[in-house]
Image 1 (cartoon, rainbow, N blue to C red):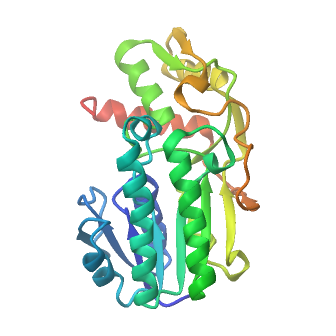
Image 2: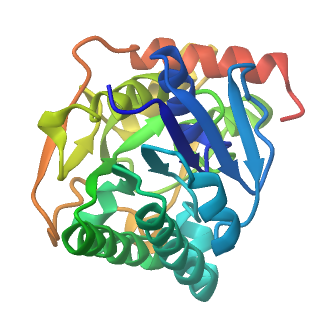
Amino acid sequence: MLDNKVVIMGGSGFIGSHTADKLSDQGYQVTIFDKDLSSWLRKDQTIVTGDILDRVAVLEVLKGASIVYYFAGIADLHESSLNPFETININIMGVTVALDASIKANVKKFVYASTMYVYSDQGSFYRASKQASELIVKSYADEFDLDYVLLRYGSVYGPRAQDWNGISSYVTQILKEGKLDYWGTGTEKREYIHVSDAARLSVKVLGEEHKNTAITVTGSQTMTSNELITMIFEILGLKRNVSFISSADDVGHYTITPYRYTPQSAKKIVPSEFIDLGQGILDIVEKLLQNPEK
């Protein structure tokens, strides 16, 4: 194990908070830095609120840290397409501030949360900001001898997801309205991975064998959107009622595969044991029924 202190930038969010929990379970001393307080903060974790662009605050929180995970920034494709300047400013300058502070604080390893969209010509300004950020991470690593891992997440779902997260948004609309308005054709294929499995793999990459590499983090269950939608309606015991509004291209999503442009070759890791997609959807349904106002 590396030295004990880990700082998770953006650790109040979806994947970040789950990764924080897995790190705590492994005995790491976890500090979360985020603009928002975490709804899932554990007693064995510390949180510091602040702005990712505040160089003084970021340097202060990184003092004494051995490892930095970077989950901060704008991750919603729709939001990024509507706010290109804010997306580029926060996503690119944010990671640059964190990298610069990491060098000053003598951090040993920098783990950057990227996306499968870096392979694609889809994803608008979100994809562009992630491609640029990966290059910046690698440049800092080359220049200052900083170990890094690039985590390119696929289709992650599960508890604590944002409202715009694919499976969560589908289940929510179907529960509330008995129908689904789907932006796409239904032929889109995804390798879904439960956030708990994704977080577990996000800790596993701290091993020496993953040093200075890009890692594709996806699931073992490949399914078309059409099959997924049918599964959700069946789990809920409802008659399938779906409207396909447009092609995936209209909203910046890839259809079968993201692979177009490859900035750096990547290893791929999938969980050998994983939460089944059907069980994962059941868990989402139960949580939404317990909290219908969400």
